[in-house]
Length: 393
Image (cartoon, rainbow, N blue to C red; front, side, top):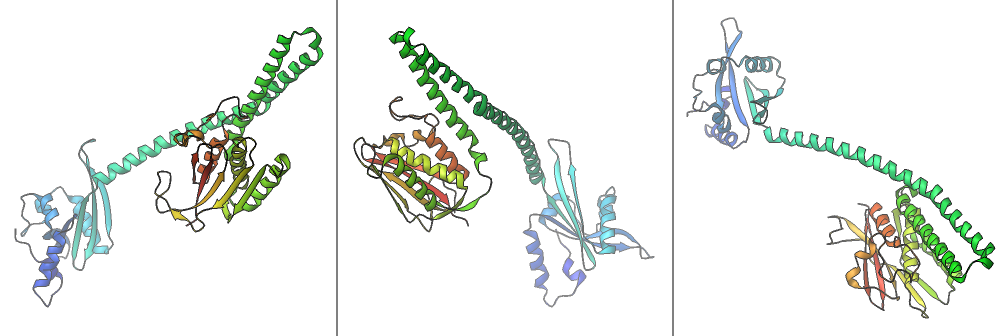
């Protein structure tokens, strides 16, 4: 099909090849481009718009129709709205954009039309945006679903908070009253109790104490997000020095040695970071070797940060690593992931005091700080816990 040179119709060019190159460029566009020039009546009124140029995409929209000496209303008498927009743009020189659908739901196509003036011509750029509109509809549906899920989650969180409040008050009080009642029986009714009866009372008290400990740990775990509200620059060395003093008082300096090297300040939640290292050091103490001094070494391994190739690491984010290493009992390396699960116990249930929540608390705290924690160990030689904190960009 022969195309009229629409560039030369609006301005003269020194080279006859330049307009043709321009047309070839327009043919590479993925949007339909039509150029019109106005047809005027003897009184100067616009009566129609004559096709000057269409690129390949626009020609595909026209099908087999040719545009030589053809006008918009001549080819499409019902396209009055298109004529009106072309006339408005010609008169005002302001661009117009229109989005509309063609066809029924399910098979409908969405089209974006943009009208703009180019010297004495008017251009109509047409783009099929069906996939974009469908994607926007999907996003809208997903946002609605997400909003519903968020409301459901808020409801569940409210219920969980209610349970936590009940557990923190009524449940603990009930356990305390049960223990006190059994203690009264054991002390006041001892002469009338058999040895078996006394043993049963003590076992019941031990079970109540275990339940109380478990309740307190569950409350601590569920309350973690509400412990701190503001992020601050936290001096970890101050936290560790405070923990060292507490442990030296409880265990004696001859039984535990804590060495801290190159510990940085971290952006985070002070109370949560204190709780994190408390549980990690407490874990070292719990699983230390009997009749053997406990050495705990805490060191910043990557002071300047490093990008990590690990499923838990975010791409293009540098992490600073703080490692806590002990010379204790260690654990089976195959259990390095299991030990962070709620209520998991790597050793005999009754040998070590605790509910199996401490390391789960550590993982949750690291999640809140957008970091992660990994564990490595050699049985009977010790364990290392690596805490990876993201560095601010």
